Amino acid sequence: MAARSAGSFVADLHIHSPYAFACSKSLTLDNLASWARRKGIDLLATGDFTHPRWADALDTNLEECGDGLYQYEGIRFVPGTEISCVYRQDGRTRRIHLLVLVPTLDAAAAFTGRLQDYGKLASDGRPTVSLSAWQLLETALDCCPESLVIPAHAWTPWYGVYGSKSGFDSLDECFGDLAPMVRAVESGLSSDPAMNRPVPELAQRSVVSFSDAHSPANLGREVTAFSGPLTWEGLTTAVNADGVAYTVEFYPEEGKYHYSGHRKCGVAYGTADLERNGPECPVCGRPLTLGVLHRVNEVSGSKTVDGLEPDADGFIRGGEGSPYARLIPLREIIAAVKGVGVNTRTVMRAYSAITDAIGSELDALLWASAHDLEAVTEEPVARAILQARTGRVQITPGFDGQYGSVSLPGL
Image (spheres, rainbow, N blue to C red):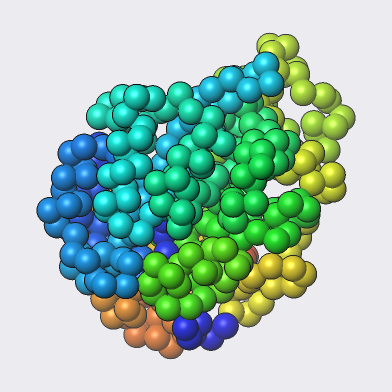
C-alpha cells in the first residue's frame, strides 16, 4: 500500500468532549477540527451528544452537508456518543460501554430524550444509564432504525462486552434477539484485528478501531478507513457490510489491559504464565485482573495469532479480514529521537514542520518515502519513522490499568 486507498475515508468515531469525565477542556470543535486535519482524519464522531451543553454547541456550530453528515471548518462530523450501561443480568452486575451513531442531530435529541429517566445526562459526557445493552440498542433503533450501535473497546476487563470483569461470552448472550443488529465491534487499544479474527461470531462482522481520545492530541491514535463515499449512507454500508479498507492500531501490548496481572504488586502474566501459575496474585493472593490476551483466547477457544510481521509498506496482511498497520504516534517518535518529553515545544515544532510539509501525521507515518521525510526533518527522525513503520520495536506489555511501552532499539 504505497498510497492512501482510493475511494476510502479515514474515521475516528470514538472521541469525547470537554464535558466527559477525565477529559481535556480543550476538546472544542475548533481544536478537534484542527487536530483532525493534522492527523489525516476525514470524519469524526461528535462525541457526547447526550450532554446538554455539548448538544447546544453542536446545534449552534455544525453545518448540515446534505449527505447525512455535518461539517465544521472542513472536517465532517457524525452525531455519536458513548453510553455506559450498568445493570444486572443472570445474577451478575454488567457494565458495558456502547457507541451510538445516528444520522441527524434531531435523531440524537430524540435518543437523548428517551434516556432522561435512566441517568443524569448532565453529569458526564459519557453518561451511565440503568438500561441493559439490549434495551439501549432497542431504544436507539426505535428512535432511528438507521442507528449504528457498536460495543466499545470490546475486550477490556471493565466495560467491554467480552470483558473478564462484567462482560459476556458472546454477543448473543448480551443482546439476545437483537444481536444480528450489531454489525461491528471496536477492538480497543489492547487488541488488534488478528486477535479478533478467531472469534467465530466476529467473522461476519466489522472489527473497527478508534482512538477513544480524551484530548485533541490523541485523536487518530487508532482509526478505521472505510471503503465508499464520505456520506452517512457510505458509513452505514461500510459498517454493515464489513467495508473496512484498513485500520491503524496501537501495538496491542501497549494497551493497559493486554496482559493479566496485579499492578499494585507488580505482577504481569502472559498466556503461559497464567496457565502455569493460575489466576491468583502470588504476592497478595487476590485474583488477578484477567487481561485482553487471556480473554480473547478464552472466548475464541484458540491461541491468539502472534508473530505477524508487516510488509515493507507497514501493513499486516494475510488470512481473513482487512489489512492493518501498527504504529507509534509521531510525537512519541520525535520525542524518543530527541530525548525530550512528548509535550515539549521542541517536539511540537518538529511535529508541525513534518505534518505541514507531508500533509498529515498518517501520511508521514504510513506513506511518505525516506526522501520525502529527509527533506522536511532530521535524518534520525526520518530513519526512526521508517523503523517504526516496519515493526522493528521493543515492547513491554501493559497490564491491570498500566500502559505498556513500545520503544525503538538503537535510539
